[in-house]
Image (cartoon, rainbow, N blue to C red; front, side, top):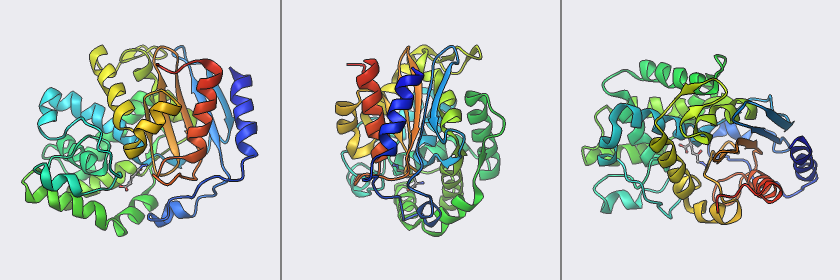
Length: 304
Ligand code: DON
């Protein structure tokens, strides 16, 4: 496995067309696009890495996998009254469907859906308490107490977050949020600003590899059926309007973030995290997707 990971790294190092870093969040615009990291972790905890696998990056929308998991734990199936589970076919920050669909977002991974999930997690707590809870959960699944939020990224998002504020206010106009918009956005922006390395992120995905249990630590995170459902949502909606393309090219449940990270799950085989900050036109990591395509080609891990 280390040979495969090394050869993917060598290949990606030589690429000149690396996509474009996100610039609508100023703090992400200063990230060096030449960085690349790949980590594969097996259920037993064997770690195979190449590139800068111990460099922290902003996980952004990948955090939505963890908040969805938490919200399902808190609300169970009642969550599905507040957010749908269909692919949207629209960009991650689109507002159009909300108008025709009574302010209920299509799925938990588009921004509107993740804002609704942040509201659901909060109950009636303050953002500070909810964030402590989210961090606690991410640290637990990754088995790593050092994971934290990059406050500079959160501030940067807050200052340029008009689109997300619009989504939240639009949902609030349909009385879909239980908490004040500003508080929900505070929670949402901060959980998107969690920083992790590919090694930490791959470890955090292990519970989705083995039917809800992190075999390496022995902790059950979610029941088996829930792990399956989270994987299905990642496959169908995890790359927004690029989800079909990702399923076609890679064939694994995956979740991307605008920081250039992707978490991919090969059920029963491995949890994979890749990071390359340059994005394709849709906003998913360009080389990250290509690296996963190579990995699946080499290992035969596609679920299809
Ligand atoms: O709200 C935003 O726009 C960002 N915090 C997250 C978007 C994102 O990661 C989209 N993923 N590719």
